[in-house]
Length: 146
Image (cartoon, rainbow, N blue to C red; front, side, top):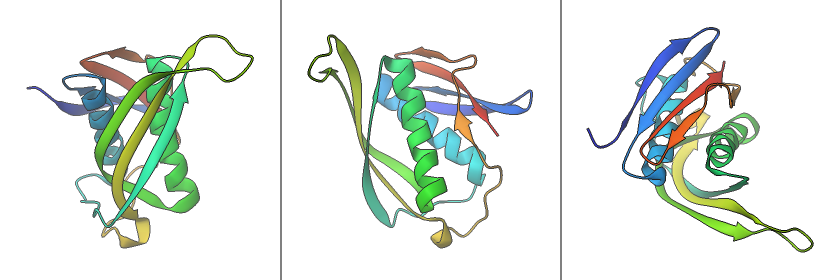
């Protein structure tokens, strides 16, 4: 298998394993896994498109920020992601007066407002966490607070 995701139960939380050929595929598959936890087998229509841009101190921080940004869009604007159409990850210099770099993720996603989804939320995820987080260029494990 070159890419995919697996959802497993965890004490009071949900743990998802995602894999792919590179960080971009792993992040995309983890997003699919997260939405699968929330909506089960229901299909989210790809009616609208928007961009997500987040930064992180490192790749682990970036993954958590990417997933939590999607959850924030769901909670605040009622948006559900159907597909990650593009992910670009690159290092960027810190702002004026700060030394070093952080990692920037710019993604183009498609999806719909929850009112346009023909299903209810199966299990609401509160947040992606750092608890037990493992990330390599081909695999990730993350625990979601439900």
